[in-house]
Amino acid sequence: MAARGLDALWKLAVPSAVAFAVAQQSIYDVKGGSRAVIFDRISGVQEKVINEGTHFLVPWLQKAIVFDVRTKARTLGTTTGSKDLQMVSLTLRVLHRPDVPALPKIYQSLGQDYDERVLPSIGNEVLKSIVAQFDAAELITQREAVSQRIQADLLKRAREFNIMLEDVSITHMTFGKEFTKAVEQKQIAQQDAERARFIVERAEQERQANVIRAEGEAESAETISRAIAKAGDGLIQIRKIEASREIAQTLASNPNVAYIPGGNKGNTNLLMSVSK
Image 1 (cartoon, rainbow, N blue to C red):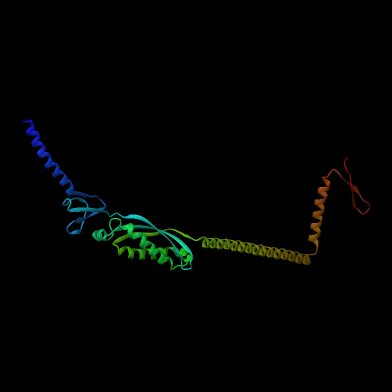
Image 2 (cartoon, helix red, strand yellow; image 1 turned 180 degrees about the horizontal axis):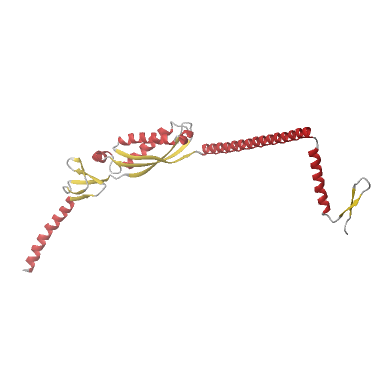
């Protein structure tokens, strides 16, 4: 009796396991930020794009290929020559995503690694083409215009492969050693020229100050001469008396100086005594 029960249970378990496995393989999930394309062994890649959620397919006959359709960043770089034959190294940061309605075409022509196959080649092509149209100096002074030209051409080329670009920007730009050295020498020369101009301007200001000072002294002397010519030399005599008074006060405060009255002329002789 027990043997019959185990046998019936076994017969029931095997079909159930098979059915469960088939059901599990018939269900697939498309996560957020993803889309799926169905490959049918009979009809090939179906044109319908499967949205997010849980879906069904025919096991073995059909297969779900899931694409990440969120915007991703990629770095592209190249080394090429400018219009004036200077070597330039450029690095781009590109934000890209696939064109969702065109996912079946992308899978048929490029596969799931479409960005690896397309972006490096078209990025290198566009960079070389645009950089060759500018001189090295223009690449520095017109960086925004260069970036816009690169973005426009890269958008056009990527659209041919059903790839959408959200943003393209130049993140790094370097030049050859010769050009870098020439730029440094030019900067040094400009700094020397600025320094020389500053020295010349300072000398000119000092010269003007000396001229103004000399003109002021000449005007003062002329004013004094006119005053003397008009009022006589009384002012000069007063200045002499004031100077003599200052000298007398200085000598009077010196203990080593004695005053000895002179003769009838009223002069005063000075006797200098030195303390030993």
